[in-house]
Figure 1 (cartoon, helix red, strand yellow):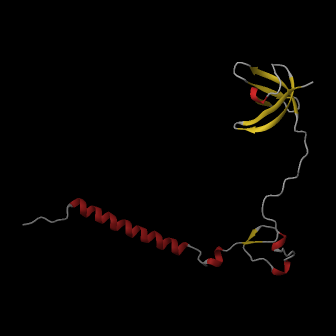
Figure 2 (cartoon, helix red, strand yellow; figure 1 turned 90 degrees about the horizontal axis):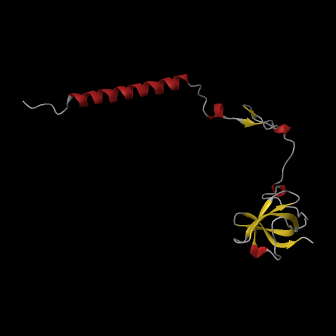
Figure 3 (cartoon, one colour; figure 1 turned 180 degrees about the horizontal axis):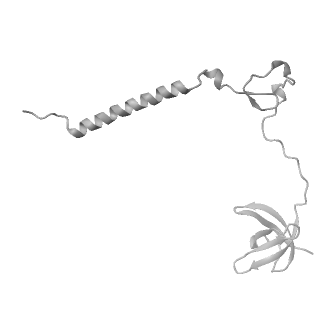
Length: 150
């Protein structure tokens, strides 16, 4: 006599699978029976004239201001031109002649800026008072057109 093609393990797996299907169907029915229902109208939310969320639609008689689309500016506001002196004053806080670079500490803001010997018009050493301009460098602002303060 031939043995059944289904083993005990296969039968148990099938029973568990059927049980899970039944439990899932029961949970679905339970959710349906406990839900409030009402569809989309029950889920709808409105914003009143003050910007608060409410469950009632806004009153069309309370509508105050009509906004015209052509009055709306989209984009970044233009920067105002700020006049400032491009020449800064500072003191050389560190300078390495053998490597050709150093740092200048600005008098007003106490910011420290990198300076390279190629950007110096005069010979500078530590402690010198200097005038300089700033440019954007690869790692931040860099002092250029460095002159000794006279």
